[in-house]
Image (cartoon, rainbow, N blue to C red; front, side, top):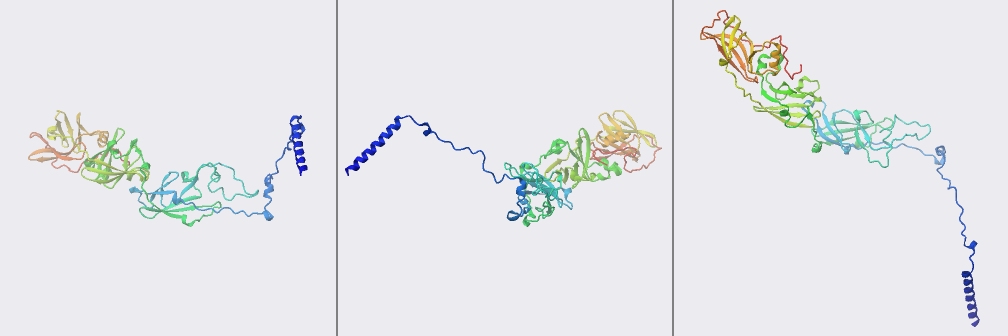
Length: 475
């Protein structure tokens, strides 16, 4: 066994000697050199590098595919529409009701008439691209994509699209119609055409649905103005409106042209600095034509204008409802009756019956000493400059149109009382809402023997030569 030990010792010695020779000898550069792998200059051929014609040719044999276009479905608009009630304007109560509809995402609102088609579009952030046919000789069906060329290429970074009303209600493949179901509900009927112009009928549950009326949010309440004035409960006051009462002068002397004002109340207003009047009764209405109020009976379509409805008239207050053109915003306005605080002149003090000039002309003298000749049915108005006779169409127009104001005396007849001749007439107050009978007695020495004892008592009328027109009334 001893020889095995000597053999091991000899082997270890050889290993140590070999390591020493390697450490202290010169290195062989060829031994240390790493041979690089050959560089691959071309990538493996891609199976998708063939031309488009190559792939279009594999529609036969085991690779043939049968292409079926996707089935189009109706959108669920019940989640996108809000019903805010019907148009409640009094002049909108006809055969066709109007409904206020809003779209949630777009925030658009519209007044839709019952039975009318309202077209919709689908909008969003899209990347327009040119649509290519699936096959070389294939022709697209229909006139184009159902939502337009841009709408079918949705950008990966864009947000979800939304529905909106078609601008100008231009026809699109999607539309809706409304039908009244009650005071607080409406039925929505949805219709849509596919790319071939055929009606889409599925899902059936989305073809029609009911919406219940909701209240307008306060943040969406309409802010509007009339003639530059913000609409609120003080609008009539800021328009300098005055409710004076019934115009007795026009009722007595207006003739057929003003027969329509009988039993109505007069409201005085201003267009700029020019005064005008409107005449209303309970239940009647006025419209704002852009510059002034006028009777709704004088316009062809009152629904195009803001509407002021007289709801109630009592002894002191007149109550109105003011509606916007869509029947969405309503304001309650009140107007207090104005009182005429001007003192009526005493005719016995203001004027004296001096005598007769002819059988039809009478001489009167004012308290300033000025003498005037009057005939039956003459009109005298008291101005700051004194009594003025309304003897021209221009003066009559000015008085009727409130550009000339003051108490008005009208001479009716001459009569004999207690042996004395008396001129009898009636006197209107400044606002023409009150009238009283007055008498001008002659002195015992006045001679009017040539006058007729009985003169006509018919109420005086506006002279035919006068083209009197009431400010604010459209003929």
